[in-house]
Length: 201
View 1 (cartoon, rainbow, N blue to C red):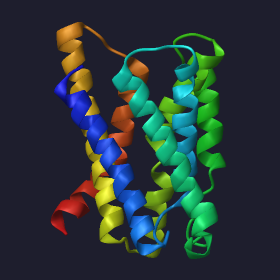
View 2: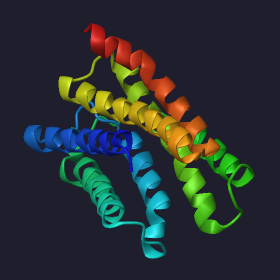
View 3: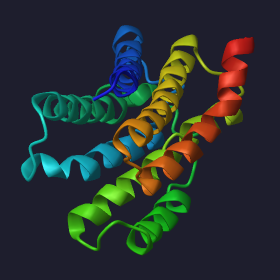
View 4: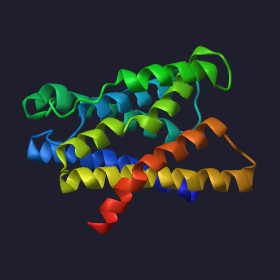
């Protein structure tokens, strides 16, 4: 494991913790897209099914469990505990526009045609577009709380660090996963406009 991977994981985890603390501290889900959180929960659930079949390392297992727990806790906060504060009217992105093509692509372009591999591929493709409902919500309302922008910044930083991780692995291990790299680059592009606004404002 290299420093870019570790920093990427830390940045990803920090983004999720920032979001959870924001909800708990304010007792509100205002400005948070529940639909993006549904997609991220689906990403972690379909990607980490290998918890039941494959052991890689203690670090890997612990991180997977933490991400899964945080995703489901966030869903509980938005749709159960603080559901009255959830802005469903502005969280109006139609998920089928993402889920249908991502599902089709995961069947057409994958490493091997097995259930776990297709679900892993689905999670990679879905993660690249999962933030779109959140970005759509921000563009629709024209505003985002400081905490929400910090959450998005660290998510974008996580993707940028993972690109560095892939470059490092290519040169040190001769490892290259086209599906993960292309999807990661696409996802990072979605954050670029947000990064510009974050830095300038």
